[in-house]
Image (tube, rainbow, N blue to C red):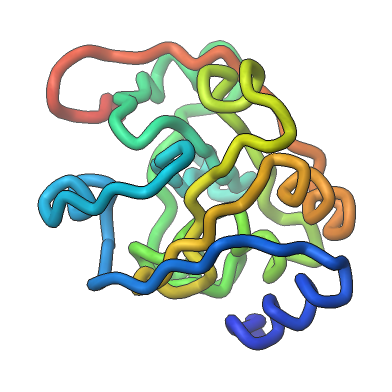
Length: 177
């Protein structure tokens, strides 16, 4: 059974992790935050749940909220047979969340490590341990502002080792699939 916000809060208490918690109207996409002009400190993110062509490997790709990722180039760079977006069913099965509620915090629901965490170097490598990242806690009506150090602590606790990637980006208004 997937963890809920209460279980996540209990884990934060156990690990002595503190973060600012914001409540807002539902934000299913990064563009939804733009539409309501929601401004918060920190790094806004786009969370993409991907799978390989065969559905054997799954990836949570975290990038900038306005990034347009070239999935063909990423597939080639990672030597993975065609990357595509995973289904809502796979999202529920592997991360225990609904569409629009994905974030790094959903890795709590992946104790079997079916999902590989990929972080865009642009939003990760140049930031210190105090940088804040926007994460939905299984609910897109909340955003928790997570310090990088706390995220690293959570990744270690869950046994998820992130892979930091230099992602190929596209210009335009669509994500290349």
